[in-house]
Image: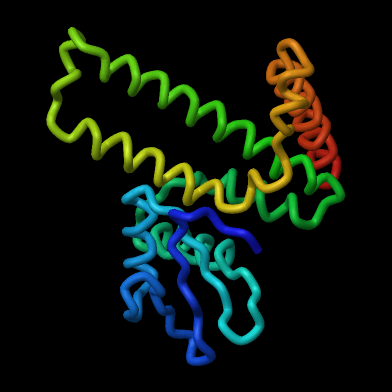
Length: 186
């Protein structure tokens, strides 16, 4: 699997210990969460099989934060995620989540750009850069593998005027249909 140059490679040994190939030392899940908060992309590979375990470990990091009382995901969202794995509509959920987080990321980026412009009263606020980096890292961590293969290619985006709006409308329609089906199951 190809990886970006700036992606931090972590290898998992048979003993389940995680090895940072950049610093040649062992790391914990908290260390990995820290790398992600700093804006680094992380890839975790099983040394023996070569399997990509990144998604599994990102979910584990989120689960540990949730278990400590750092509730980011509401219970109804978690419940819907679990239900989506047992329905035929599961292909809609990752696309919807990817589109939702992309809209959130775009909105936050625009807000941060507006705050960063000269003359804005908050432009020199201490910690503004750190706050922006944390938001970006959070979105990367939560997105995990949701966006993989679910967003249109740049040529598809260029080919359609207002494609994002149409895509969002289609996702909303599919979500409404999914909710209707789920209501019928209960």
